[in-house]
Length: 154
Image (cartoon, rainbow, N blue to C red; front, side, top):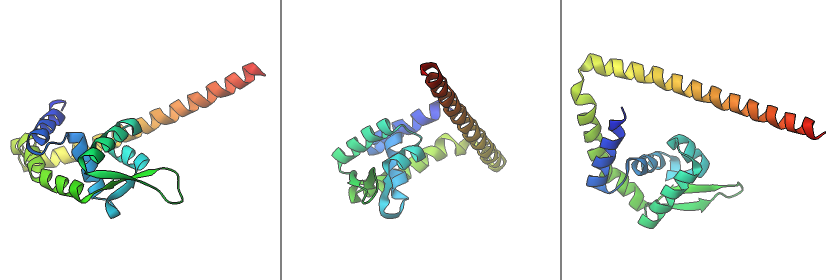
């Protein structure tokens, strides 16, 4: 599993000049209405820190693939996919899909593909629920620490 992202990254960089993460961000934006999304929401969907995403969007701005836009009436900034960015993701997609097929699905029969889909769904739920619990517990611990600090100062 740790070799798959590297294999996809190599293919995308060689054929399209984008990293796997850049491709993922371009794809996420391409699927949104108006090809735009609040940076914080994009970071969440991309499973990245806002700092990492900001760095990648800055690079994409330099390449002409994205731009930032202030959100009217709301705090924050949106990332907006440009026409060149949309063209880039369309250009990169066939090679990406081919690489996924070669790296993953060519070695599986129909039954194994169904098993992989089922196991992936189970794993996704497990990871999501565990991470939510970790975040909730960390939030509770932070509140308890702050409460204890206030009591100590009193």
